[in-house]
Image (cartoon, rainbow over all chains, first blue to last red; front, side, top):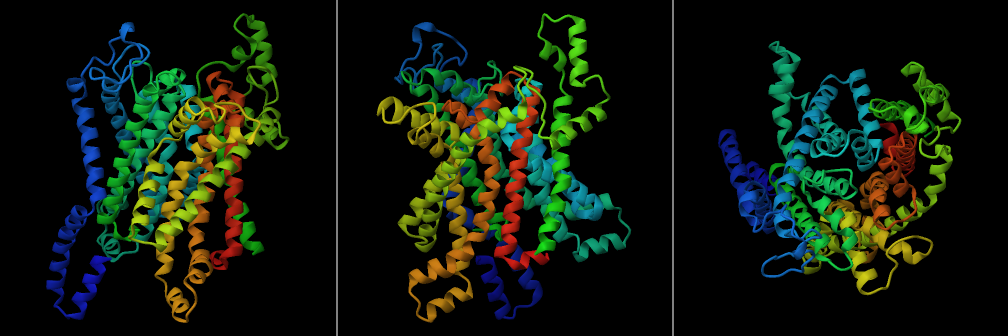
Length: 304
Length: 306
């Protein structure tokens, strides 16, 4: 809203075009930073995400205990000064396991979104740019994939391919790309009639060059917002799959797997499922807050 | 209107075909021999061979696919590898329990999401609005199965108020419905809020206000009706994720619906059951969305001429 008000103000004052343009390009960036700094929720989101990434990167160096060391004598100890978040059935420190698991969660979130975006961009670009029967076929395939409840299709793929984080990433990428394809396609359709695309066609650039150099860069901000908002979902989905035993292997101590282990002891040791789930919630909240903030800045159209 | 409905139905046909193709190839690309699974591990080579022939697995792939599709039209989805029971009947029998759960969860999410969203929009930038927005965001950030576990911890183990598992009474339905509905309530709250805010800015709202209508009338008669369209769409789309979520929630609460059954058969790699399950869920999703589209045509006549 603010930027359009400013535009209107500029027009009212009848400023020369060039001044206006410069003002606008400068003020967009300043405006963006100002808006970001002014939004406490976006800042909180950013802080959560940075802490999460920090834990994921530094994980093995900062765990207070060895996340894999079993010690039956310490089994199911409540939170204490030694074990801040308690221990699990095998006497392993839950805090250390949560820190260790952050790495896998982050990896799953980032790589799934990356793969989804790549497939979605390719399909969406082709469908939107060429239109006609090519678009029709591609979008019906998209519709068909969307018709399956994502988590069930992912579960089926996991049941077929077997446990392991690599398979989780593949399964979740297969499940989620169609929404990216829809998004990119609708962006491309609105962009391909612009003058600069016509100009590029006029000087004889080939379709691939036009798509990659002239159309794609203009969809990027929307794709980035959508991707940031989309990091949270695969993290939850991975936890769900691992919780059901159709995700990570026991060697890949993810939060979801930890919860599935501790679930049967929940009655006596509440901390075993509570803390991994809480970390999951905080991380997802962080990405959602950050995504909301980014949307406000990069894509004023999508603003609430 | 007839043309619009017909057009929608025609559009659905290729999608349905693709859904069957994806399901079929997913299962047929998998390693492992279904005939051996059906026959059991101690079966002789001849027994396996005869079962393979009986199941039609010796035929070329495209013939198998066509046979399978032919079966679909007769309501025949094949037989379980585990117990030999017909897939269709077995799955359909477990559907009502899941439908109950899904409806209950919709009651939770709409019951919370709509009023809170409206309140939040009407009282924009107040304390109530901030609290509503925080709760919406927290709600949609929580994994549904974790909500389920926490509810179970509190209401079954600590307070001993609600049964931790099983089905049959309304009490059994409360926790699974909340676990499944709460994240969606967050989404609906946010959407209702933003949609209401947009509508409240429209000229006809100002007209209604300026001709002296009561605030309540303006909000509930003029604004709400128009703000509902995007919300209805999302509620339709949410059905798919709701069916998916039922798999996890039913497993957490040992609730005997189609979701938990699907999970158990997935672990057992009962492929005909997996295929049948994927198909039934996808068909339900497509059907509901087709109905939503047609309903839309009635509510919003402009869409028909798109």
